[in-house]
Length: 166
Image 1 (tube, helix red, strand yellow):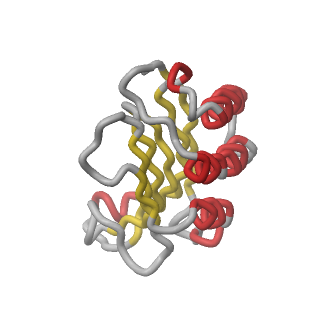
Image 2 (cartoon, rainbow, N blue to C red):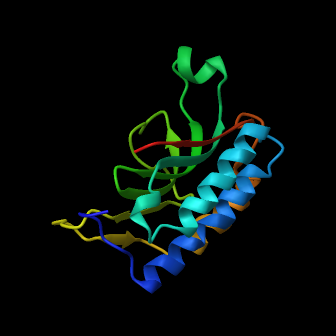
């Protein structure tokens, strides 16, 4: 497809590590049959990230929530959401892990593992094409150990695996 960048072998190999995250999420007890089917498609899309003709928008999310009414209705403070997300949308791959606290709802809070990375596949970009604050392995490792963030308040786990057309 004209107007897209083809990743070099180092970037391609790094992105392939996301397949472990996709497989992990798709094989949790929270995954449905539809999630498993979406995971198969996402794995294919990751494996073909060097072929723009295969591009589709997709996402894989693993979230832990505190959905109790104390935080949202009674003004109490605390961690209410831990997230691991990988999205491919509009020729951009984003990878993020963060903790959300009621005192800082828009930014990472605390000293938990934090991760942000992105890769832009548009041909002409004015920003850094590939930005990874750590190797993708560290993101995957933290996500696989998501249960260490669970406690009596943070118990609700949700996953989401979706694929759509660009």
